[in-house]
Image (cartoon, rainbow, N blue to C red; front, side, top):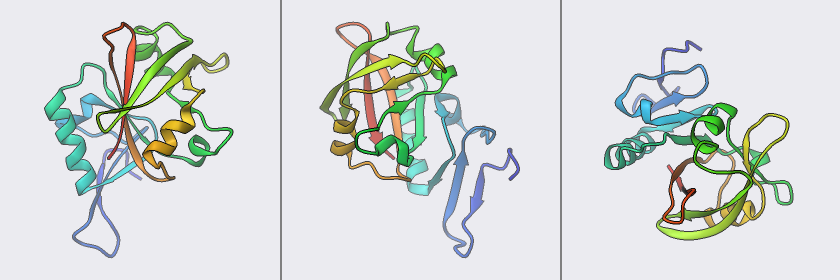
Length: 165
C-alpha cells in the first residue's frame, strides 16, 4: 500500500469511500495535525465527518489519540489500554505524574476512575485498574474506532474523554 494514498474506494462499492490513517499512512487534511493514529484506522465517510467535526469544534491542544480496538484491549481479566511511547512522553508524562488515577468520561458522563501507570519495559502509559468498566460502558468491540482525548482537569493533572467514531 502506498503510504501517501490515504483514501481508497471500497472494492465493489463505488459509493463507499474509506479513509485510512495510521503509522506510515499520512494525510494532509486539516484535521490530521490534531490527531495521532496509533494503529491502522479505516474510517468510512460518516466516521471521518465525525472526527472532522470534533477537531473543528474543539481545536484540541493535545492531539486526539485515534485507535482501532483490538482483542487484547477488551479481553476480560487481561484488558489494558496502551498509549504509544511517543504519545506518552509528549502528551501524558509532561502533564501527569504516573502512576495516577484519572477520571474517564464518555458521552458527557463519568464512566470510571482508572489507574494509569508507566510500563517499565516500553515506557508507554497504560490504563490498568477499572479499564474493563470503560470497555463495558462503551460496549467496545474489536474493530470499533475510538477517540481518546486527554484534557486538563480542574483538580490538576488530566482527565480522559473516550468516544466512538
